[in-house]
Length: 366
Image 1 (cartoon, helix red, strand yellow):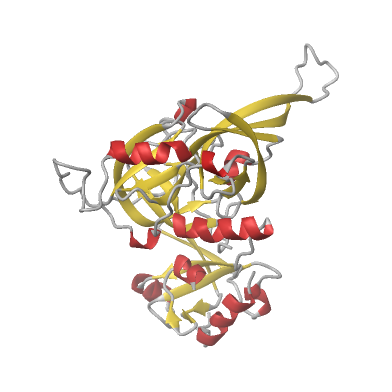
Image 2: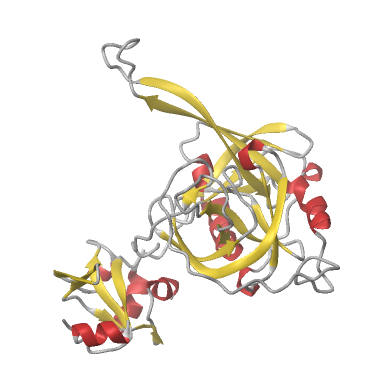
């Protein structure tokens, strides 16, 4: 095992690369009807007592839940997609085993972001859709076109041809300023119940969830606001009435398909960057390093006699990736310790661009 000087080389990886790090995490269930595994969720500190007179954690600018709903609901839409799926042949009605095509519909949520008619929703809401319709709070439905979609962040942008005066864009906030305990409201269409509002708090920050293409989405917001199937693509709104995230997944614990108080929203700062590229180019380019790595702890360093106590142990390198081009090497020997597998013999990454790295999410961010 080698701890070669990879501080400057790791910086080269970020520059040379083309998202996510190929780090496989258990994905939570996608809210648009697509199933998934459970993600690992840590305990969080107890919620501070809510203030009696206003929205919990209120400030002078805080709005009541009712005020947030009145301002935001007109800009939240129900997204209805129509897809064609192949069904297994019925041995009685179709004895020759020819697959049948069936038209199916799925429901999700979305919200208006500008007067040009652009709307944001989840990629998995419109994935494989043959046609998309959106309905507004006045029950007016209209066809929408998919401007672009990004499976790596589970974000899609739609567009409708509607008069600007009929559109209510929602203000977009700053997800970097969100704190645990902040009050939030989710508005969406759970199980097709249009424009339902639920409230809660930010339960945790910096979570990771799995995108539809199995890449990791970083910096995710965890909330206990009730969100369910059909809430996908809807806004998570702070006490000032600004969108701080796009509701995307729930953790169910494997015992139910409904809400158990653990939901995840893609941070709006990620959404803004992705939506801007989709509107301008119709696609998104991500930095892709191409490594699967394991965070080094002092215990692992002692156990495996590693040259450093903190960093990343490279286990796999994707062929043709930036890491492969830079000469980073993965491990070859698999060992199991306390039921967990490690691949030893690869490089150790200790920094990128002069910044120490001790987690894969930090490396991806850099």
